[in-house]
Image (cartoon, rainbow, N blue to C red; front, side):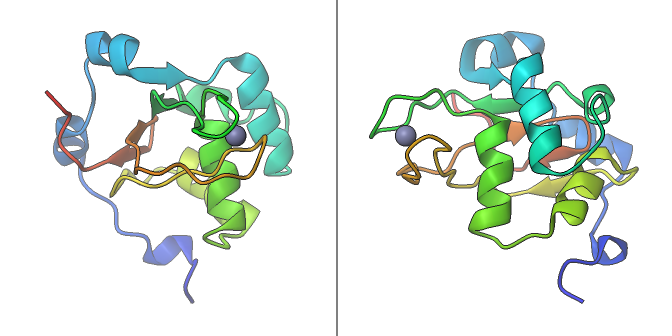
Length: 137
Ligand SMILES: [Zn+2]
């Protein structure tokens, strides 16, 4: 089973902590999904309103769409997971809200406004899901 949460590799709390970004770095380099964007993520995943909130904040490395200028957020990231990676909604929801701490590589994200995929991979961070690429100096 390709998208079986049971098969998702979890790292321990110590290792996950090493991928945490400082508040400073998040403020400087990341876009935090606001409550409207989080609600849109919940609707996109057919999840109850308020169900994602506790597992945030949902941070995506600051990137503007090179085509339409939209500031990409974790909403675009989730959309990309569904559309481009063909992840089932329930799987994505479970990864974002489950007990496992998951570390993955930076991803190229598709803009939800104009469907253009960003030229470079971006880092991301939320409560249970983080990016393993070292922070840029
Ligand atoms: Zn765009």
